[in-house]
Length: 190
Ligand SMILES: [Zn+2]
Ligand SMILES: [Zn+2]
Figure 1: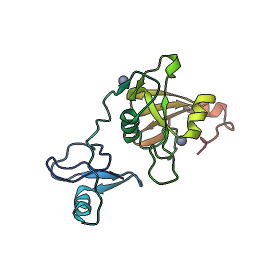
Figure 2: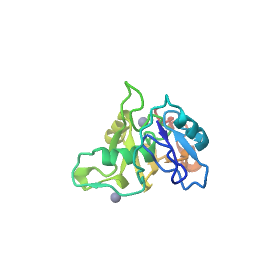
Figure 3: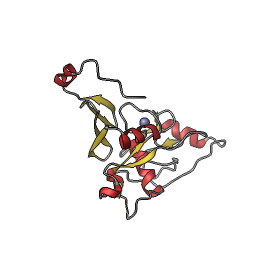
Figure 4: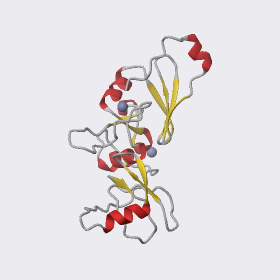
């Protein structure tokens, strides 16, 4: 799938369009399957191909708060969450946030603060987690803080910290902590 940010007024389509920024006659889109950038010019060429199947969807503001007064999460929340997070937000996990290929599963939508504990069903406090890492968060001692929607500070069971945002994952643990448990610092499960 392709997220295309294009010049206003152009007819370039996108499937699940997340705007990548304002463009002045040229731009860059992102191919969701490969997470690789592609020039708007290339997208125009694809769209001009009579063989191409183009689905145009309305642009979603991934920064907007989408609330829902119940535990259940529908596409109005899962779609902007997937477009914002792209993958499971566990450190270094690359599982796509939504189903891209047959046989794949969409990631779960995790309430950072559980609904039963007063956590709102809102895009600002929901993150994409693959099933495995959702379990790890629910039953393990890994936890995360949402710094801003889409930016997550994880704390491992041994107190190591990982920042996961749109640029990827950064180990932001203190060296002091690293020395204290030099051999008990497992790489996060893939
Ligand atoms: Zn909110
Ligand atoms: Zn994961």
